[in-house]
Length: 283
Image (cartoon, rainbow, N blue to C red):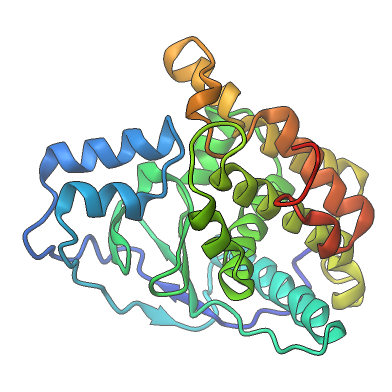
């Protein structure tokens, strides 16, 4: 994947090395474990689980260093996130609208306070709608490669684009639509929301080169790496790994096949309108 010459926007908040902020009341060990199981096995929004087990207690949020990171891993996040924002700026402009990027992309290690509760590295990357920030523990890249078998920078970029896709959904109202739909399982609003974010990641991949003048670009092999990443985090794949069987009634992100197909839809169409998973006849 080409990215090293790309523009960084500096919308990064680097909290690495700060350690977790103090919690008011705190979740306790049992609550944290429950939150991690809820996210990793069942794909539940971490804020949902944490609020349930913590009684909505507030967690102190830290202030990291704002601006372009100096190290390569941080610069990669900055360049990709900036490029994703540039794509969405263009998409919104074409509709006569103004796109407002996420408040920040926070990179941290181990744990950090968020507007959705205590963020833990074992949760994987997530978007918090309460503070409009994306949270990434970069150690997840190792898990993505060694535990889930998704290798390459494009796989990592897919994750970033997917999480910023959730920010887009927060702006457009799709996130609220998902909550109103409720229900559980393979046809739920939660699954539709996640598959749309996969499709939005594909839309980014389709336009990355054009908006950056070729400084950020994905070739066909990179797209395959992105597809492998989508497959690696499918509900059925994760459930087989964690419990040895598939439980469609517990799906919240979609199967590997669905996640690959919707990512590919975004890549091939380059059109956010093609990502309407809420009205799709086939998920």
